[in-house]
Image 1 (spheres, chains in turn orange, cyan):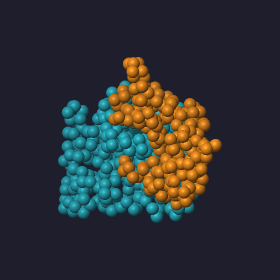
Image 2 (cartoon, rainbow over the protein chains, first blue to last red):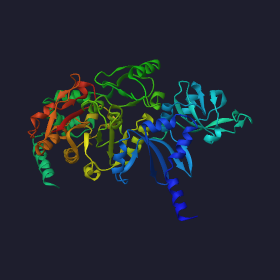
Image 3 (cartoon, rainbow over the protein chains, first blue to last red):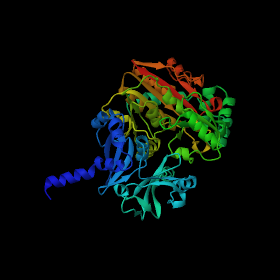
Image 4 (spheres, each protein chain N blue to C red):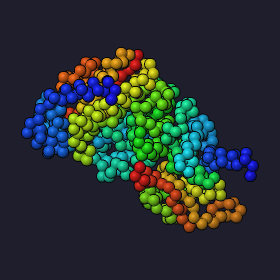
Length: 190
Length: 339
């Protein structure tokens, strides 16, 4: 591998907001527009991880540019983490997607399902009222979990999905694994 | 120690020689888990032991328990409606545009789903007023500093109150900033930058600010009604807080823009940590003006006559809130404007 390619790859690993935007577009077509209009994206390195945040107003950019990185702890809302070129969504992305409008790759759970999910439990089919799993390959099986009021509760992963060969839509799955839910704010103890 | 700090310590030492301890002070200190000199200092403040006892007798359940609506996600009326439907007895906290008094709740306020959705955050009734002491005009592209942000309760209030401004929140403690980061995510507040820095080294940021909130580290004597937070503080402890507060405020003033506002607040009713500290700053900054802080005729005026300490009379414009008089945590707010 040539030095320039290596450097390019390292830079991409350090900060690749495009990958995050592509991931979020799997849930909402308006996300790019919202980001462009209202927010700026920032990559922040924490130990061996790269965290992606959004901030606004855009004037904050001048402050961040002026600021010595050594003092910066955080800016804005964390929307994702990059790990080995993969996007791991964060809870903060939910408010951003709610703002943009969630259109696909989500499930709506009933009241009992909501309670269980917020306790960190997985979701079984009897808790799911609606499932809109249009393009799971785009999200690597990751879905947004919403309550009946369409409030984002967290992120899940569809386990063992079976697809319709023609439409590529999910017709069957075993359960939805809890990746992270809002209850984490209490359980983390931070 | 710099000469100015030395003179502050000397002045306080001299003032404290006026305090006398009796059997009553020792008895009350033992009963309430405090230092006898704390009782004596508050007797000097109120001028009567009866009021000190009234203050000490005020327990947590006599204070307003309040939450702050996150108006970025929901209106106060809508949140009140939701909470009532869950069996909570709530009403508007009138001095603020987003506060709610919770009279009773079948559940812990930190575990309701509405809390997890980011619809509200738990904040004391007096603490909410510090941010509201800033002028409420149109705030486009201003830079606001929160000097001792901690977990960011007031920072997030600044964030939701001044939505088009940038809030720079600094704290020396990374663990507290981790809590702030989580609060930003839960509340969906995007206009805050968190910086790890000792507030006494603000010059390293090389920035000026239109508004500065100095919610200084203090003795926490205003939290006496909360038994878990009640700590004995010796005279030495108070002096060490005062010198730290003076250093922080003195550094903050240097980076306040002309025409800018600074709100100094503490969760203590101690005169040393409030009017006295601000008075020492006024002595060396003649461009500073004291602006009165008023909320719906709540609270009492600043104290300028205490143990013979030299305190600028303009500091009557500060606002003092007492647990036994105002049903809030003990709190003091002073506002300065740089001309």
